Image 1 (cartoon, rainbow, N blue to C red):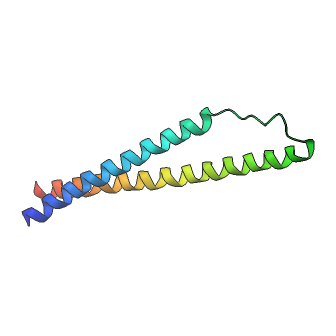
Image 2 (tube, rainbow, N blue to C red):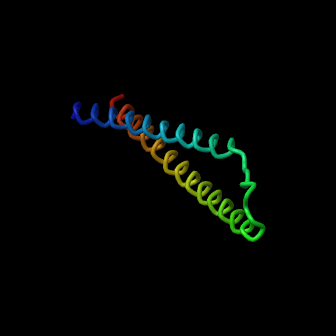
Image 3 (cartoon, one colour):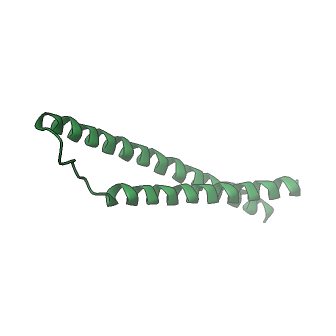
Length: 93
């Protein structure tokens, strides 16, 4: 019984660290996404400006959606790691 509890604690710590690393990755991606400037090419024709702007806007919203999903998943993983770790630690006491 002691061995199973120790394995769960280690698995909980690994899950927690994986969730934290995903949260750090989301932060880096957000920083990169909002740190880049938006520049249209100078040789673009007037008829292509709207399609280029819509393409940039769609790309932006897809990235925002992916970042929101990644943040939720990372938070759930981190919370699961914490609950696994402390559930078995409380059982030991």
